[in-house]
Structure formats: structure tokens, C-alpha cells
Length: 110
Image (tube, rainbow, N blue to C red):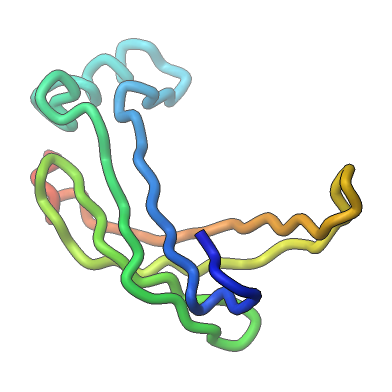
């Protein structure tokens, strides 16, 4: 959610359905969903909640807390804003892409 026109005041939260893992190899996907890795029956989702966003050159640094298997760790996403393009109603539409790297062992994912 963005209040006003300044993205630095944005609040970004998302949830990932871990059961949606799809590597293109069914046997591997099933193993990733098992207790050996994500333990989907016990931990069906990953969650992110932002704490701040700051512009850094042409990108934004999105800080927040990522929860995987009930383990919460701070992460920083590099975010690129794409757009604007004109929407059907004539308003501006922006898209964003975000990237980060985590260590799965920090979250108890073997």
C-alpha cells in the first residue's frame, strides 16, 4: 500500500503459498514440500513484511522481515520500478521487480 505519491512511505507485505513450488520436476517438488525441506503440511506459507524502503541510485532497497518455517530474519530486496504505462482508465500503472538472496539454512531448510 502506498499513501500519497512517495514510494518511501509504502508498506509491502506478501504471502507465498509454499505448496505452489514448481521446479518442473514433480519428484523434486514433492521432496521440497516434505519435512526434509519446507514441511508444507506444518508451514504452508512464507511471509514478508516491509520495514522501510529507500532509493539507492536507480533501485530501491526494500527492507523487511521474511518468515520461513516460523523463523523470522531481516532481508533486503533490490527493487526496480518499471513504468509508468497508461492504464485503461488513463491512470499511470507501475510494475516492480524485486530480487534478494537468502541462505536456506538460516531458516532451517535443509
